[in-house]
Image (cartoon, rainbow, N blue to C red; front, side, top):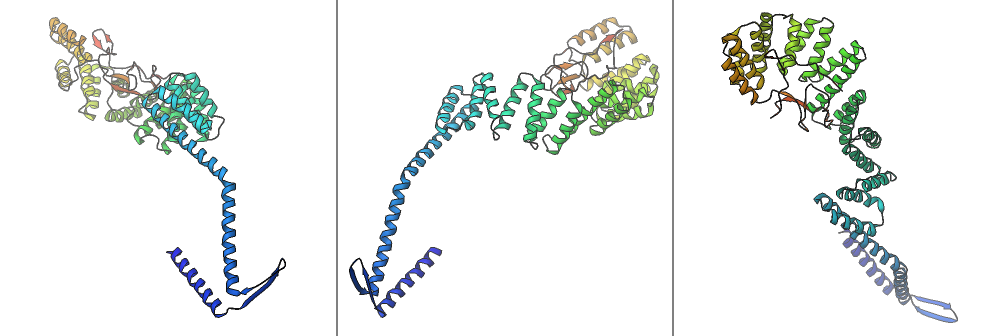
Length: 452
């Protein structure tokens, strides 16, 4: 629209000029190079316009001739770049598809066409990894460290390599360097917190987890649990250093951060019992039992309530069961206490509830065998229950969610795969039961949590 308006204005101005010259013909006379030129103003104006047009055309032709080599070179360079980026893209696709030979072919083509090594370094490293050449990949990743724009990618590649070969110390060094470059990287915050925890730097792990939480690197519930685990580990460390006050403070923070983390509640209750704070220990166990019933809590509750004989243990176990009536662990706890108190009917009814609830484990079958022998003296029936126990499902244990390894006690990380906060209390299919049988009865009280 603007161009049309400009054209109309120019046309009107030109028409007006022609009309004005026609109405005012005038004469132009000048002497140039021995020549005397006389003409009308209109002819002189037309000649001047024609000369200007010819001069402009000659100037543009001269510019075209002088710029042509550069434009041709630029066009060729642009074409090479397009081919190079196309090869780079194909190489990335080949890496993603796992086609090592095609990736290697495309990376060679891209490197030759682009002539910019930083652009192809990452593809070279990934191609080397695809071909199983970790040494070459490491060389390319280290080369990236010399380019400020590629340094983070190089550190990430070296970090992943270190984690893969199990070198947590080296991986942590790379993660800390990368964190300086990209402090807002959610992926890095999560990786750094895990590495700090796996290397036992629990204070630093707590700080890294807090930073990861701000960056929303993990779901809120998972983040809170990780932070609780780090606080629990700090508490255990303080206890080892004989700093009872710090141990108690960290343990209380861990329970507040995640009330469902049973090992934290167990540890805090033990610390309170060590200081004869039985009422507080009792409250801690009761809250933990409501959140997540666990056999480790039963013995602590007996200590907190002063239940030293069978009848008192039955009363305390029943109180736990009343707090969480649907808990099969509560029924088993009452049954064990009832067996000790020789309350056969009560023991039988609670064991039956556990069986009806699907808790047909080795411990329950063993308890049934003990009940048959002690109550009725029926060794044949007792033997039948023990035979069923040998083929029964294993009792719940601390199982690593990443590798399936079973730990006898809870740990902040799996001792096999070093996964941080991967242990969950569940039934390990086909795994030997961890509960031991002493004098014909399984032990309810589990060992104290340990950290490494």
